[in-house]
Image (cartoon, rainbow, N blue to C red):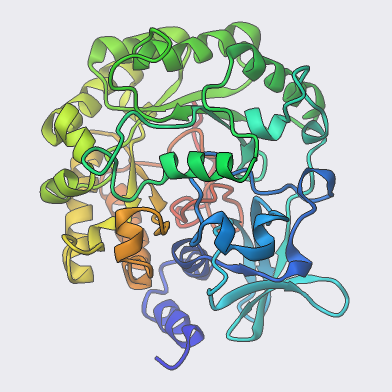
Length: 439
């Protein structure tokens, strides 16, 4: 193919069942986007909601390598519409890559657009600065630092533990930069609280609740690094659970409560439920047995793949299968040095995992892999997985859901092209545009 445009158009023609919006979205997520200075934000003092770096960097360069985008943050997300492909409203999480063939820039009239191979392919909308971001906590911290919102305001993302106790080359997941992201923000002098205080989280949520008069924020996610021993004297279920308990006591029924944690024993999972959590995300990361061992060495060492999967199934007894939604990192199946060499092999393996869980009523979701350069897999695979893999995965995902009569999972907003708000993969954009059954 002579250009990126030709490759994208070829895939849209070959896979017409996949919405054209999802093809562009997956390419932007897997390969990133460059920003002209005219498209950057004025950080927290401007009119555009800036990128919060809510858990990982999701960038294709370190902060010092991003140029002006490290000083004036890009927007948290962008919305694509119109253009020669007549794109329906598509929300895309921003992953900065100064070398990307995609570029966001303003035209002579100041209107932002997305350009590919020098051609304007879509109009670009940016999220307005929410009123609740303009108010500080009593400590002086910003709401964006303590309780940022993503998915166009739908989800409050509470990374209450900013590092991971799987530490070092022999334990860290090989695609994950949570620990480096912590280090780079501290080195840059940015506020980046390691362990968030429960009272500060509640104060930030009170500000959001007060000023989010449209009730756009519908769910919160509690997450952070794995806890392999204790943190502040608590095990993982009690540490993350204490935040859920406090939130549910102070704001009963205000938001859908979700927690991303390890696959824990059933008694621990029951504690999450007792604390008020409604949706449990025990992420399985990658399906293939060998790749799980190679790319998730800490999880293999402390729990093991088979036990991890058993615990996921067991958690359905506590939450109900529909409310257990494990994530996988789509694309690492093809990461060198150990990944599959062909798209056919990778799709077959991933689909095997989807069928395993969906046959038990559990609907996984996925995040499109961004090869962050400080991770082992990012260094070895700067281009990520082929776009064809991501497009065929969307096709396989929807087909497997249809095979088992499943619908879009709760806590992710509306499904369907032009309606979805989930921003870090296109799985919701690729599902039928029906109203989801919330919890």
